[in-house]
Image (tube, rainbow, N blue to C red; front, side, top):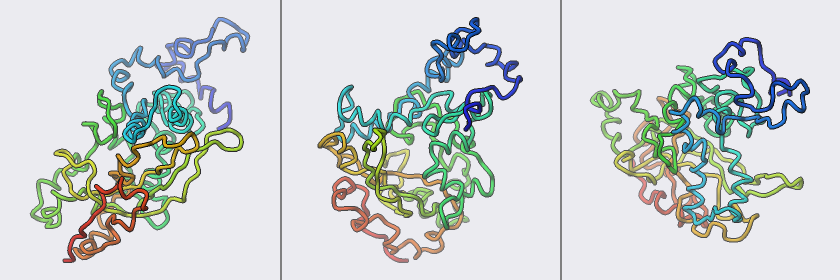
Length: 358
């Protein structure tokens, strides 16, 4: 975006809006009584939503302040589970600040501007949007995997049926969970408000007589096992500093796969035995640039994690017939699919017995 697009008000209508009537300095600081630009902007806060929004929006801000979007606690939990030390001044804390903390977002980066990670810039003048923009906010951060899947940007893979047939934007499904639940969680799947397929598709559970596949498999397969297509998996991401001293990532190319494995989050709420797994962009040497053995318990978590791909279809290659899945070794995560260095970490999700052909 041009500089003026990032800063200037789009039109005079903003002045008459609720936020416009509050006045610039209430949120941004500075001194509006000074006519000289440089002096008037002393103390200016470009993104005041770190603390100012809770003045008026206490109910939301109170919950949001410990949400995954705000704290990036999902990344922290994974690193700490692998034995990482994130105490201030530690090698891993430095790596986290350089490479992970940039994913932290603020109220304004969802409701007013694009995220800093994508270059910032106001989405539509200084308009405050109750619903974030799918294009400029949601996909801006979640584009490489989820966004490409949902919109059908992966070659040969159609877009999600919820997009191609119903034109549903992200917040049509993901609404309550965006600000968190008021509880500190390690993954979005621990949020009690997380969206589930059955929230809309109630008939799947109540009317199984007309669908023998549902009647047989609802109790042991997640919906995505039958209704997702191939999706992106990322491997061996190494974090480092480039020749200019800027944080960079060097990694093996991403690959399109579809892998069914044992459920690593199995519980009364997520009781399926088989789920879709996605390889996360990490390996034992991810942070070696910053020091040796920074993640001493790397095998404490699988590198193939519970996934919910966003390319849902009614008909998929694996649900064409019973034999399309049963006995089809290529669909399942087996030892041959896992690198030797990661077999210990993934022993709980690797499928050891492929369902017999039907």
